[in-house]
Length: 621
Image (cartoon, rainbow, N blue to C red; front, side, top):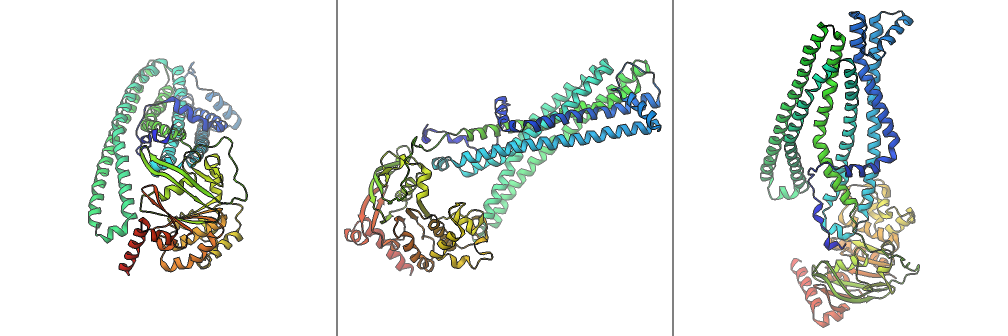
């Protein structure tokens, strides 16, 4: 499917809710499967933790109360062998029965905490490893999407999938673990309660549907409330980012009061949303507590009647009261996870949309390898190109750059200059036989092979996290420290690098803000020279450099372009007078080709542009 026919609107910033989709969850298990042994280990630990959690109250009720304190007659009600264990330890240690019972109780509590902790740690590690792999695969996929994708989708929307959406999946999978940790004791407790007193158990279970209904109602109400909270927080962050990143403009135009008022409005909306969330939770908590109190009331009423009637023991009733908490905790946990699950479904859908995005450059089945001794001849042959249907950017562009020739491309803004070099660097598909390198159609060459042989210096030079040397070599093992230093010296970047605190090992801040624009541009020249390209492209490389800095690098430019086919794109026409030829583009078409003198004599578009710039410089002077 072509890029023009794709629906890019699916990449939205806001996380909406989706219905539960088992297919999405099942697909997610692909990244968890390699860590199945850890998941099984976590399952084993949660079973052990549930067992210890159930045995501890059994010791209190059946051993301490029924056996030791009340000496209740032995009944058929199960005690899970805790009485036998207590009697055996009393005989072996000859300690007071209460001390022995307390010791057994302490052991079960300790094991419950230990196994529970181990379960949570092992589960979290398995989930984090799986999501790490998912994030890695998603990042690798996004890195290989073509430029046409990023022309239509904002980078922030893509980042949301790698950050917020992955984090939401952790909440989902960890939430499943929480539910598992709550439901295992729930079913174990019900099993024991049915064995102890089926009638009382069924009477108690009749309350659970009421708690479930209350949870569903409150979570449906809270969904919109929490969505409003997230939306207002997002608006706060966006407003804050815009104002702080543009603080100089804010202060320059005296917008402090106006921006403060706008921020206060959003802040009040966030406060109101948070207050509504607190109000909802304040109703939900007491409601669930009331359900628990009602359950205990049922246990005391019906259980007390059975104790007086000799049907059951006091310890059994107390055990039921202790188990009541285990019955309600899973319902509360489900309520807590309700919104997380539906938000996670949206995150799953968004992540898999990105992973399944099949937009890609056409790769030749049998790519032609560029020769080692590439001459560097570049030919544009009747090239036509459009980003959007029926909106041509380049129309029937034809000219040839001979080996070692320096060609400048000029024209008004929007004439197609940058598009031309982006096509040469194979960021987009082009018609067959419309761009050739040494007579080879670039559509028959692997894009990575083309980019290894073409060096590009952009006006907006990008700095990565790392040292100065890292930003010259860019991880290329063939570029040694000596190569980087040699390139830096050649373009006169070594002068400022040597003044940095750690020289070539000086770490650069975000986007190289601890360097001036001119220093960043010199670093860009060093980066390109270090890779020793066969074809050189300078895209407005000196547009933002002051005149003094530009004079410093003129010699470097001569050395950089010497013996290489070079394409120079510049608005400042004075910088390209020495080009072998100048190509004038207007509205995507080649209007004029010739030397500076020839074009001036022609008296066309180039002469008009040149004279306007000269006049502008004189007026500013």
